[in-house]
Length: 169
Image (cartoon, rainbow, N blue to C red; front, top):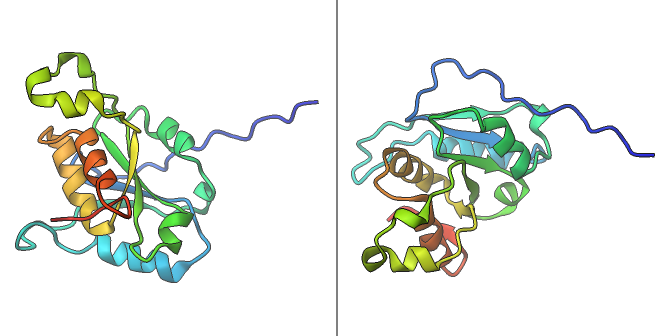
């Protein structure tokens, strides 16, 4: 006998969210103190001189407790303006850097890349995810949304760090 699958997780409607608002979904509800620290860091201005206001929408709904990356990606699949989504999972709450899981919602077609300039991207496996410190969320979201940098470039930068966590420069 197979167990019926549970209901599909659905994102709550986020009124007023536009393409420049980073989306962070909380999937671990075991440590409110860590979560509050993450949210505090996400709400800080960012940029070279902190000239940009933090633009972030947070989904803090217990129904998302334990959600997997695949469940989140399925829920955001219809959002045509969303290129990257961030998860505050158990690792986020337990790590000293409070690193969020960054997931791409768009798979880049590497067939159109010029091999002379993008050889390292063509050869590098694109995992579709990496860890980012809360202070790096806005940089990643803004640049991927605008097309200034690809998700794979950020993933490679994170993988080059000893702890595999992307931080702002």
